[in-house]
Image (cartoon, rainbow over all chains, first blue to last red; front, top):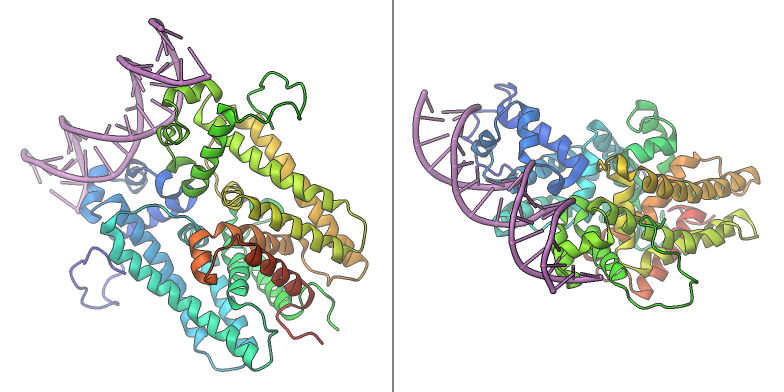
Length: 221
Length: 221
DNA sequence: GTCTATACTACGATAGAC
DNA sequence: GTCTATCGTAGTATAGAC
């Protein structure tokens, strides 16, 4: 995931000092989430960080590399949260619910996460050939997460806990119910009449998803 | 919805000739759907239409106006399909299912529809003040559709057909299950292992949504 | 209604001083 | 590691001939 191969750090617990590189990543994350790759200029990023435009190129070889680093970081944060819950013990239904809870937590943690992930999913910007290794890495991570969810669904169907649904269609619906929801920003806040990321809204969202999976809209028998 | 106030047409059935204006709209729709407002240059649009760059400004005052015209057309097509089913007679559950079927049909009709709608929902590009009237019109249309769906859900809850769900949360989930799905493009096709817009994929998608609403993932009692 | 020519601005990226 | 200066390109938009 580390694209620019910084000098190997001695250990993860040494220093959490906010380096320029990290500041750039944070600023760029917020901007790219709002307006997308093409909609953000490096001038804007540099100004928000408090650097000159040229200084960015000392930390990232190109705008594309910066964007891919941002995407990789976001996907890494999601994986960090969701991966453990994929190998949890328990019944498929419980495990799926824990996995979705973890995903919702990851998306609710930073406001930019869901938007960037959604952009990564449905946008196809044409990054050049230089981007291939980084893109392959993020796609591998993504594929791992999706395959974990697919396994959960198949296990639930096999043991009779789930209906014999189309697994890919169901995954699409679950992505919509989580990633889209938290990516919907201002529109979602107008619709729900309140913030999307408040503890209460997140809790309610988890409950609604869980109940929808258990019973659909129909009243429980 | 018509932003540039063309000379009043004598009637809708006179001539379906493909004017330059319509060609531009169609080309721009495809491009904006793929790469977003900022990601598309007017040069690219003009070349794809077969005109010089400057000729576009004879039909649209600015890039922003062109984008808003594209958005309005897309939303209009959706409204045209969905609106009738909102005032259908019948039980709330049946009406909701017909309404979602109509929405799916509208999204599956043109490949760009869902992407543009999704972009309109979650992106906040900063169009200037010049855009206010057009934006207000599209938002009114959107609000009407959403309010129709909300009424359906509330009616279903009131008559005991639906659980007492959070209506806005459910709408978000339904948008995700429809708009996001058909906007997911290449990713969705890799995931499902086939085209998103084939008659068979659309039919399956409708069935999956319907069953999810009826029973969730759980096996029917 | 489309064209050529052009104005002005911003973009990504590089060179080289400090 | 950050800066100023600059290159080449492409962006939106306008003016005016045809």
